[in-house]
Image (cartoon, rainbow, N blue to C red; front, side, top):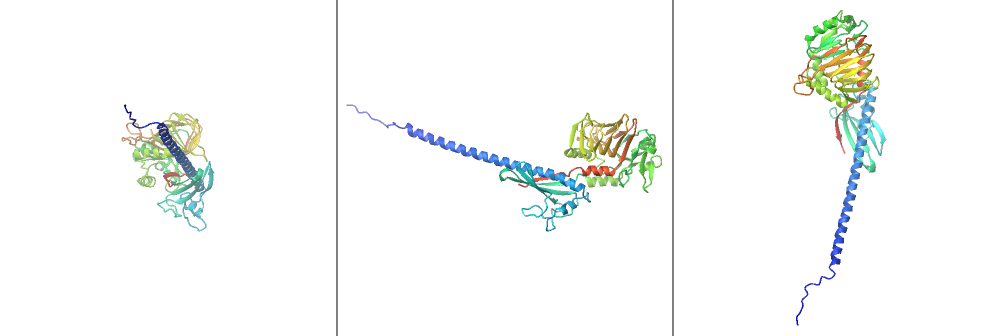
Length: 423
């Protein structure tokens, strides 16, 4: 009789194995749900914090305009001391932003979308945040914002008044070999003496190379010299016919040094002027390519000034106000008035075309900054020969006006020089 051995009875093994698999799958599913919920919560928190950040950022941008408007009506437009003093709280001192500050907000709590912001003003770190005396036209804006679901964000932005260096002349030609051609109309007027206020008189044409003075004086002498007006050192009114040395002057070394020291711009250096172009682009309201004109590009108006930068040639055939910077050739024509500062940095060529009675009220500065390769911002940048040709029919009036320049500058909000996301 044979015996049969049975090694292990595997009946019913499928059930416990299936249960184990179900438990594992359940745990995996639960973990996936938890992870998904966590990711959604993190994503939601991130979205809320981002929205709070953007609300705070909007507060800073609004505060720049509010600060500009306050300073424009201040008795002291050269500093923010009045604005700082006006925002001290009941204790009469500036405390800076803290949870319990009694400082008056520059902008009270303002709703924006699903959040709100409040903006405070203090001095900058150089003067000392709580100092009421502003010595450098620089202050700090603190924007405290709330967003959805209790999110919050605080931004500190230090801002500085945009302050263009004063033009040394009604017309300023930077670089050697400067060329000027005057209009032949007896009805035109070019003024270096301030026609809007009692500002310090300037030459009609200022140059950096004293060797260019004789040729420019000769050009003026052949284009109705009695139409070029200025004031001599004694305050007497003169014309190019009676006192050509007052009408056309080389910029003094002290003036050049002062502009370099106070504004960080070397008027004798193409690299410095090209850097100024780059910096101004960051503040521009409009940047356009060349080959266009003022009929298609809004170039501002008195009370609504614009900083417009044109990369290339431009035709100023419509009135405007503000700062116009052209890196190619600037042509102006027709019966127009431009109020503010015209800068032709790059190709350094400006010419009048056709007839019409036009007026530029403020100042013009021209510089050829391209160097031999014709490209700004390269190693060979060096000042070339600037050119202004005002010939043509009709009248071409160019007058120095300090008020036009000051009003234009007061229309520009202070520019950010540092930005810090506190939390």
